[in-house]
Amino acid sequence: MRDFIYNAQAARVLFGAGSLQHLEREITLLGAQRALILCTPVQQGIAEQIATILGVRTAGIYPKAVMHVPAETAAAAVAEAVRVGADCALAVGGGSTTGLGKAIALQSGLPILAIPTTYAGSEMTPIYGITEAGLKKTGRDPRVLPRTVIYDPELSVSLPVGLSVTSAMNAIAHAAEGLYAQDSNPIMDLMAEEGIRALAAAIPAIRANPADIAARSNALYGAWLCGTVLGNVGMALHHKLCHTLGGTFNLPHAEVHTVILPHAMAFNAASAPAAMQKISRALGGAPAAQGLYELASQNGAPVSLRELGMKAEDLDTVVRLALQNPYWNPRPIVPENAVALRSLLQHAWEGVAPVSST
Image 1: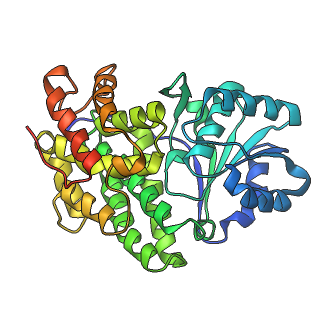
Image 2: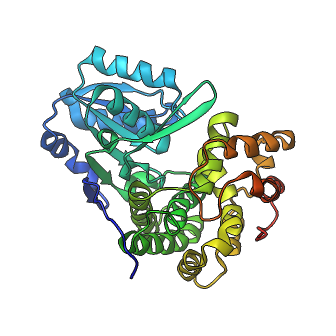
């Protein structure tokens, strides 16, 4: 047994079909009276349904959440919360909306209640990210951790199959990197492996029947576990690359995670054999990198940066940015590994199967 430190992140979780019915009670338990409902433009319909449920306790709807939380969007949301007299924020949707809620909490101290409709998992973390001048900066602060999270599988049934698959792959990425994190611990290892197993089982079931509540529940359960891992231990190369690709080139968040994950695992495979073994076990025995690639490709997810709009001539810029202020990684992100890193990105751009390198 290795030495470790474990810090629990306090959050209240309600899980189960129909859990949304308890929303007003949960706002009361926060000590709040008026909620500003946050969503993306395409999720305004769900936000309006929730506003109807809350009635006079709705301070307003702010339907302007976007990917990667631009600094100007965060500032405008904080101003709106002040204008309508909100004493809590209610984030409905995926990582973009949760991220906006976190930005509000960071700047104003308002408590956040999250209602995830995707499998991003960021609702279980004290990690925030704000993009300014083309660079996405991340940090940790206990103020941004949602105080309450309501997981209602019925709200995720309408999530398109394609986005369901990439969102689930995004969640798997949190657990996969958590297994070789510098500050990993046995409790997070258990959660990570179980989270990957649950999501890997849910993905093909959702593709076969998007209305399968059992599969949707399994996916949310896995996302909760993987998000908890993300919130408790550090991330590494995979997340560094995805933050660079997303923040600098504005590529879609979940899709980028889906494409990069198998290649990041291949890059780190020889340096993190125990983690790869756990990932393989969670995937039913397939080698970690290859198994993740096949899970995405066989379920209709994008597997290349090229199809996401990335230009080949920009890959060298990604390498340069990744080497600046690198995250800790089991295989160091240093200039000596720049050629292997560039090869990783080339394979990801082309969409070929991952290739392990040393």
